[in-house]
Length: 446
Image (cartoon, rainbow, N blue to C red; front, side):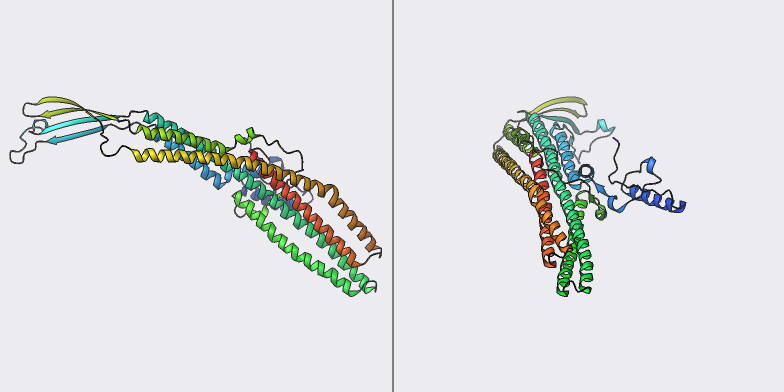
């Protein structure tokens, strides 16, 4: 599969620049791209340059792919699957045979005689023993291990589902921080222009100095809000970079996707929710607990150990053979503790499955209702509240420019518009979060 660039590099026309400058720019672009692990396209290898606004235009789809490839939490879930796979090998193992060599009848007073080792006056016994399991213990172990492996794989999918939800929310938190910062920058630019105009009018005697101070106060408040927005933006970038394992590159992240539109929501079908990995994991663990109960009960089926031996005793040198069978006697313990523990594990697995199913159904209904409510809120702001506020602000601005209203009126209109625009951004962010949580509850793409 051909990997796509994780960051977008903007191109600029350097045809009229000196050759040395073009070489420096190309080297900088090449180093930045290689540091991120993505080669430049050959056609743009000599002209691509990192432009500040587009240097890290990150789409949600690219962020999701990066998450699958680099997330530390997902790597830990994969290790759990590998451990479960290793456990299946142990479950399928048969009991090992035992080979023993015993030498007896060694008399220190008489000695062991002369000659080769085979002529010594000692009794040597070579014995081979093999235990044969009964009660389908091996097949029950294998079935239980396979079900636990299925549960581990479902846990891996569940970790991926939860991480996707967290990533999507973090992505739109970053976009919210960027848009709020941009809104404050626009407001501050407008206030800077207003302060400049107000000073001119104060000099001309057309505006009271106190009104200029009020405008200046709004300017200072907006500058303070902008510093807070900068801090929120850095925090959102750091949170997203941590999820994507982009240590030290958080300042480069920029959310490129638009806000999701309040379209028709996916159907909240119970069948789709039934395929959720947490439900699959709970079902697999319930079946594994049932196998574990049967396995514990099979411990009361006695295993048989069969042994064969070869015995050699000089001086006649005759070889003797023997065979033996051993069966454990449950005269002291009959595995009652293991059986009771298995029944307890089975009850816990049944309770867990019921809990997960109930919480999944409740979460599905809650997330869908929340998404519908937030979608209606976004539509109300986009269709009614925000256009009305903008028309009112534009009318007040026009009246202020022509001297029909005072500076307090225009400042109040601007504050109202900025507040409503901020609320509209919050509504879009809340809807994006609700959509992310609904997609996770349905285990569907965003």
